[in-house]
Amino acid sequence: MTGPEAVKRARHHVRGLTGKEVEGVIGLEKGDDGWTILVDVLELERVPQTTDVLATYEVLLDDDGGLSGCRRLHRYVRGSTERE
Image (tube, rainbow, N blue to C red; front, side, top):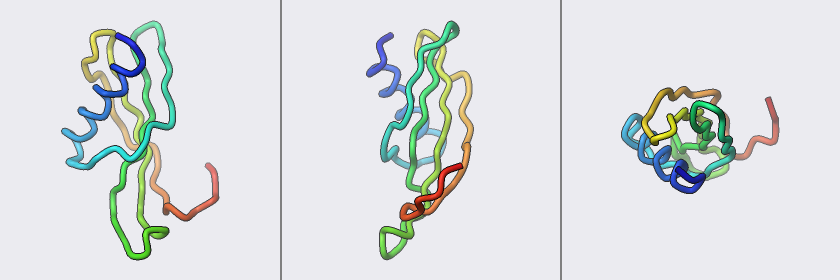
C-alpha cells in the first residue's frame, strides 16, 4: 500500500469511528508493521471559526490498510498558536 492509499484508508476509518470528517493530514510514517497517520478532525464548530475545537488523532494501519489502532492525542482551539 502506498502513502496516499494509507491516508485514504485512515480518513475512512476516522469518519466511521467518529462520524466526523478529517480536515487535514499532519503526519504520515511507514513502519515495519504498517502505517501511522496523524489527522486533524473538526470536533466542535463555533462562531467565529477561529474558536472551533479540533482534535488530532493517531491512526494505525496494518500493511493491508486494516485498522489496528486509533486514539485522540489532544484537542485544541483552531486559533491557538500553542504547541504541545
